[in-house]
Length: 202
Picture (cartoon, one colour):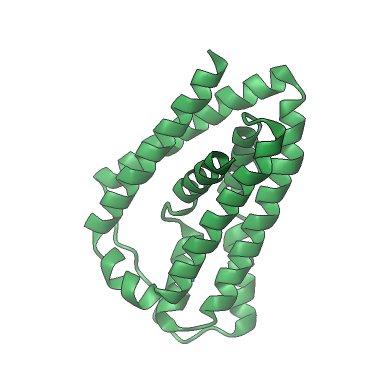
């Protein structure tokens, strides 16, 4: 039963760590020690909510419909391949992560900005609700909550690291080479998961 948990961790981790507006904002607030824990907690709560809905709602609905399940599996595999290609393209043209060093934001500003970079981002819904829900549907029903717990755990670990380790991580990710390595790892994980989905349909 632990295998789905660790597979959920690797899947969720591969999706979460890719550079994006949400991660960049949390890291920038962490570097400046400006309500960074609040920003991280909002991101964790949002991930937990959508992953729960995906695994228990969307995933169950997909599993109950063979046609929908197959379509979701192939669609998920296509999305993972696209995600992997995007990560590898980013690795070929890496960019340094810059942090905003202007006047510290108020708590209200940090909360509103965190909500915006989370819930106004289409990839947030694709990753947590649709993609993780679709992948969880490939598992027997008793194993799906463990898969979801693994993905949630990856989210919590990642945002804790971002919020508490920002001072140490910022100099590292100011170098494009660090993002090149990370994007290559993300691309490899995405292609591996896509292959798993395709094997389940052949």
